[in-house]
Length: 147
Image (cartoon, rainbow, N blue to C red):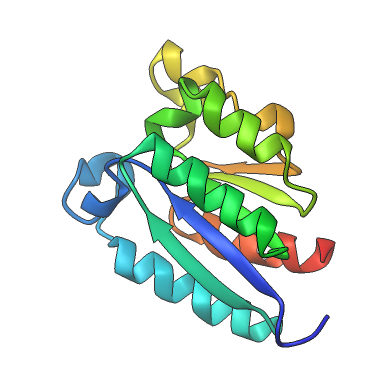
């Protein structure tokens, strides 16, 4: 692995509201904090991070397409609510040859029934859920071990 290897971290809808959105579920860590966690952990593994957040499903799909074209080394994705609804994001991720780690700050299996199904899990290399913001640090480490 060279220092040129880049990973993409995708955050979906409402994750730009971290820190203030339902702190009893998501805590007080902001998206900027999570981006810092990812960049710091990536640097420890000789990786760089490309960060993106969007509440638009099409923008997320396009970011995945760009990552494929750019031959990104791996993807971490917290698709938020799109995890449970988006066949389009799943289809885009199914084209990714690099490892993909699905991340959730909360334990989706302790929440509402509709959150128990993930369209992404079936095409992901691995899933990390319920460990709070440290889930992202673990995801970067997992990617690094698969690159």
